[in-house]
Length: 416
Ligand code: ADP
Ligand code: MG
Image 1 (cartoon, helix red, strand yellow):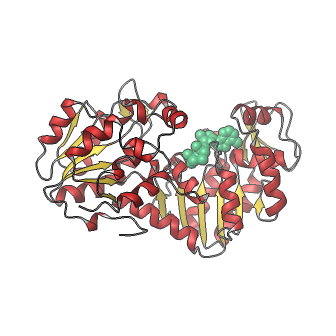
Image 2 (cartoon, protein in one colour):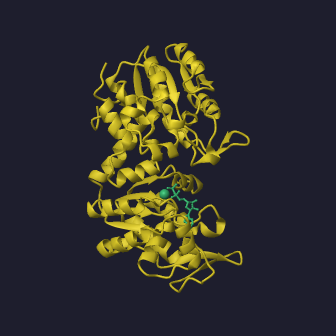
Image 3 (cartoon, rainbow, N blue to C red):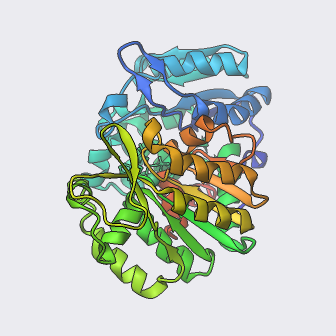
């Protein structure tokens, strides 16, 4: 038991049927059925291997895409093939989630064997819009079709889906109401790294926040600054632009339109308030980059031309960030500094990631695109911890109790 949650060590799993919820959601080419990345699949391999080695009958539950991530909505069949390669043992796939075919395949499992069920989000109650509109509590989640059909076939529920720990859905929070429950090894590792980061980071501790999915960035900034966890927050991406707008700077019509379009207009007053409270600890770019006539241009402290859209931090800013990263003892990063996918606007992100590779600080990177940047700049071997979670990580760092953590604590009381 760690953090009030059982671990795999608390159970004898030999001969037991273990329902293991993993997060292997990856960007996918739905035309050819090929995965564009497999980092989350690689990350859950140790838990699955351990359960199988110990003689458990392992039933894997996972989602791929969703209603709000529809371009990635797909069967989990390709994931089974990848898992099989990585584990070097057969992984059976069944194109059913909890119907008769799935239940029969579970009943046929022998000790040590592995079965991956189809995309759990083929069930309505697993969809994000369902979650947001119907808000089932965990007791109600335990009465959904998915949980009622599968729980009676299992002895233990293991959740290794830290990256989905902020979701409040039956496959993540329902089984714990009924079955003895534990967290898997990846969940345990991620929880341990980020709760350690929140408890006693070595100072100076620098947070770097960028990217374009910034809903929870400001809440998190407030939490880590007011608790004294972070000494400084360096900003890039849309986080910096919203701050600059809140600060009364002219970020240009296009940037304002993009921020409004993404629904982040409401964050501008939040940003202004934060700057009022923590102005000397929140570091904003002193220059920005944009593309004009197919060339990279920088503002060099001057105004942003009316027709330009900011797509990176400037070189002066990036150099200043490098120095602060090199002088830090702890660095946490979520979100690239600019549109790093494009050659003309990758410089800021590349420079920050170069410094992450060089610094002697303890470095933690989280978020899908930030992990992609880590691979692109070949820093994976030099970053101390790469967290598979994006949204879950940010909500955790914002000080929220995540639904899956609450459910697992509850389920850790159900011992058989
Ligand atoms: P992560 O997955 O690491 O949490 P996000 O999803 O929040 O990161 O943001 C990543 C995306 O943000 C990238 O696709 C990048 O192109 C985009 N981005 C970064 N800076 C900007 C910017 N200034 N304007 C528009 N998009 C940006
Ligand atoms: Mg982000």
